[in-house]
Length: 374
Image (cartoon, rainbow, N blue to C red; front, side, top):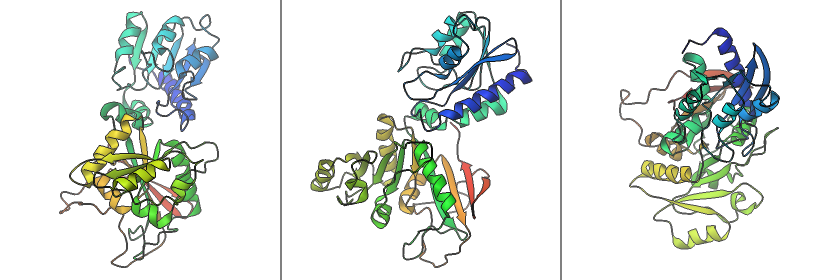
C-alpha cells in the first residue's frame, strides 16, 4: 500500500469538512463525509445528513450520478465504511457495486461490528484501501469522540462546562451564579446543548435555578434528553423541568435510598427514573452512565453543580472541559468552586490537564481541553 499523496490529504480534508455538516443531526451515529474523485476531479460529494438517511458514501455515489459514473473512481471518506445492516444497508456493498477502485479512509471505526472488517471486505473485492496517519487521522477521530467512547466502553462521552470568575469561582457565597458569563457565551452553550444527546445538572442546581435545560439554537432543533442527578427524588413536580410537557424527555437519576412515594410521583408525572447503585457518588455516576449508554445516549453535557461535577471527576468520567473565564472577581472563602468531590490530597496526585485551547467569546475567554482521546 502506497503512502498518501498531498492530493489524497486535500481530498480527505474536504471529507472532514463535509462530515461536520451533520453535527447535531445524526447522533448516535457518527459524523461522516465522503467524496468520489475520477481522473483528479470531484464528481460527487455527500455526508450523513440525518439519522436513518443515506450514509455519506451512498450520498456521494448518488451525487456522482450512480454506478455507471463511478467505475474506477477513488472514494475519500472520513470514517471506515460500515459493513453491517443497520438502519441502512452496508456501505461496503454500495462501494463495491459502484465499481469504486480505491478507498482512502481518514479514521477507523472502533465499534464491534466494524473495527477493520470493512477494510478486509473491500480488499477481498479487489479494491485498494488506504488508511490515513498523523494529523488528519487524529482530527477525524476527534470529531467523533462520543461515538468512539460509546463504542469502546458503552458509556456516554462527557463534556463538562462551567463559567468561572477570574478567581476560579462558579457562584458567590450566597449561591448566586447569574450571570458570570456574558450573553455570547450563553448563546454558545445553547448550541452545544443542541449537539448532544443529553444535558445534565444536579438537584442543587435544579432547585436553585429551576432551569428548563432546553436549547435555543439558530439552525438546530434540540432533542437532548434532560437529566437530573437527584439521589433522594426531591425534584418538585411543579418545576419547569416536570411541568412543561412539550420539552424533550426528562430522566431523574435517584439512589437506592429514594422514597418509593417520591419516585412513583415523578413517574406518574411522565418522568423516567433510573436507579444508580454504588457505595459512593463516583460509583453511582458510573452506574448511571452505564444505564444511559444502554439506551443509546452517546454524549452528555454536564452543566453543574460543583458537587456533581466533582463526582464525575472522581469517577474519571470527564472527557472534555470547556471553561468560560469571565472578567469578574467574586472573592469570599465560602464562594463555590467548580469541583467539590474528593479531589487530590497532593499536587503530585492532581489530574494534569492538556494545555487548553483559548479563544475569546465576547468579554469572556473560553478554555477547551480534551482530557483523553477515544
